[in-house]
Amino acid sequence: MTGKPMRLFLVAGEKSGDLLGAKLMQALRRLAPAATIEGVGGEAMIREGLASLFPLEDIAVMGFTSVIAHLPRLLRRIDETARAIVDSKPDALVIIDSPDFTHRVARKVRALAPAIPIVDYVSPSVWAWRPGRAPKMRAYVDRVLALFPFEPAAHERLGGPPCVFVGHPLVEHLDELRPDAEEARKRESDPAVFLLMPGSRRSEIERLMPVFGQVLHRVAQHGRRMEVILPAVSHLEDAIREELRSWPYKPEVVLGDQPKLAAFRRARAALVASGTATLELALAGVPMVVAYKVSRVEELAKHFIDVPSIVLANLVLGENVVPEFIQRDCNEVALANALAPLFTHGAQRDRQVDAFRNIDRLLTPANSETPSMAAARNVLEVAGRERSV
Image (cartoon, rainbow, N blue to C red; front, side, top):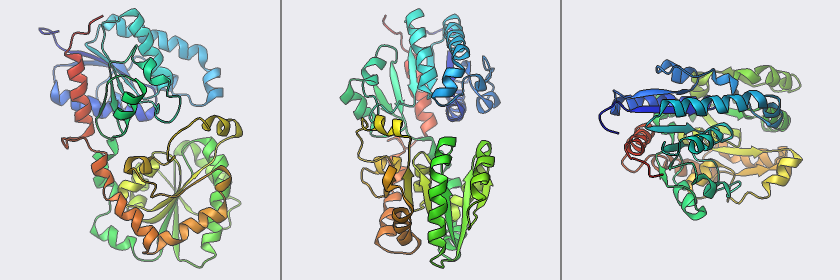
């Protein structure tokens, strides 16, 4: 593979992958400035110079019903992407998150051009759900780049592909997440800033907003001076404001990343839906209570999940320091009682705050370089090897 400029093909399937892909492109350009990068991405990757094969919106659909409705277009885009990769003959293909789309592309590429090395950036949650996917990935993935430190051992245990921990991208944003001295001082003064984060999916909003409203009413009745902030994603603003019409105590709704991060830096405590937001809050040093509600069908399916916690921050820390309330346990009394001690210094608040001081170290690769640089080095290492077929 020497004697010609390196050619890489990156495929993201939704916004989170697009952001990861953009950071990866920046790192790749630093390490291999002559490399040609093609692929599928969104606004962030396009800003880095990618000419996307088609708009990311064509494939960024979520939920069973949406997938079925758009299935013909999705299948067409899978085929189009795979054939573009085969025609490009890249030194490596990097698939980024969104396994429902990217893994189908990877399998097709492996069938059509088995010599092309394939890197999977962001491991599917095989350690929690459908572990049988791990050994099947060996047929079309040469290396997995993991965001969480426990994932390489999980892949090894399950018979998955070689897996390397490269770190979580959130640690590249610590300055935005953590309060400065003045913000830290204000965090301890009244009124206390209380965050409500009911999720970024419509189904989460529908299931969690009613109980979040009840919890807020109960907490407010205790007479605590509070400033309540609800960071929201723009496409759910109308649904959230509709739910808020019936709330006697109304939070301030903020939109966009910067207002959300500013709220994190000021927050005393948070009530949050299970998801990546728990990691953001942990890195920001905000004690929290986690709520989780799914449909009856999903609840039956989740019985097959075998993890000690649904909270990512707990899994990274290796101990259940953040209280979680699932399904029937996710009620106003339980949530309000768990939140109450987090507003003042004491054993429960201090336990979370102390544990969170370690989380950035646990999410950083061993050599202390940034996750995107660690990922880029792995991509170039795989791309520099001839693959035996």
